Each structure stands twice: as structure tokens, then as C-alpha cells.
Length: 38
Length: 172
Image (cartoon, rainbow over all chains, first blue to last red; front, top):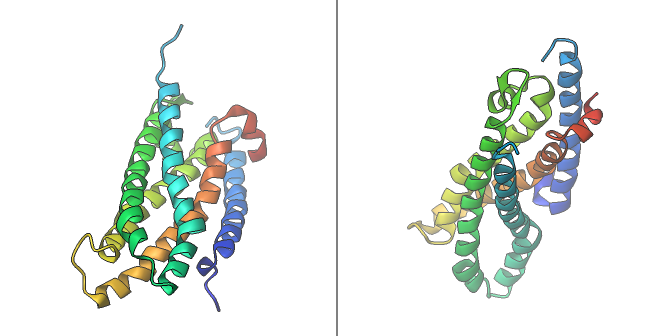
């Protein structure tokens, strides 16, 4: 399988996918902390 | 008027960040394809000799200055009785989004200094390297640069949304 990082557009798409994944994680952390006073 | 250095840290963080990420995008969106074509035409020498050393100078030090002012900006922030730098890197509560951005920026800085720059020094002849060592240096330098380009996308997302109250709604 070709490495997506070999293509600049594969790299960009990878960046957007990673953004979505990390946004879910950030949202989960922020939501979990609500009410805990943090 | 209350004196706070927040605006100075933010201003220099953004200026240095534009220098760093601007050159990263130049390398990946413009230069990589240009060097490929120029190499095929036997004309890549001037790029390696005149452009890359200067671009890499501002690139690697831009990364350092960006990180230092970002760290100062976070350290200057006090929220929920905790230092902002510590809270961000420990991903505590509302500081988690900017903390993820800070971690991504830190990984990118380490990539610049520990992978890209040592390998580029060999490729550009700044340090002595055999043809075999140069051949070995090319792939890691390229991939680290591409990884940083990929990481810059979420990093900028969290920088843009993680530290301002008006964007916090997307995390609730």
C-alpha cells in the first residue's frame, strides 16, 4: 500500500482526519471535566 | 490599566509561527515538487546551495521562538488555580484543547531539530556525508517534514479554537 504521506494531498487529508479524531478526544476530556470543578 | 504581557507573547508567538509553518508549507507544497523537476533537468544545485540553507535557518529558529512564546503565553495564564502551562500539557479540563495543540507543536519542534535538521545537514553538504549516508538521510527528512505538515492541520485547529472563550462551544 502506498504511503499517503508521499502525496501532498494524502498528507492534507490525513491532517483533516487526525483533526476530527483529536477533536472527539478533546471534546470528551472537556465534557468529562464539567462539574468536576476543573 | 492592568499590565499583562499576554499580548506580547501572543503577537510574537503568531509572527514566529507564521515564519515556521510558512516555510514548512513552502518546503512541502512548493519546493519538494520544484526540486524533483529541477533534479530531472540537472538544475537543482542552486536551490540546495542558495535557497535551502537560508530557508532552514529561519525554519528551525522560527520553530524555537514559536515554542518559547507559546510556552510563555500558557505560563502567563492562570485558570482554576493552576498554571496554564502545566494545565495545558496535562490536558486538564478546559485547557485540554490548547494542550493538544501544544503537544502537537512540541512534537513538531522535536521533529525539526532531531530528524529534519540533522538529515538536511547531510543532504546539503553542511556536514560531511558519503553518498550512501545522503541516500539514507533523504527518506527520514522527507517523511518528518510530511508528518509535520499533517500535524500542522490539527495543531492550527487547536491553536485557533482552544484558547478563546468564543470557540469553546465546539467542545461541549
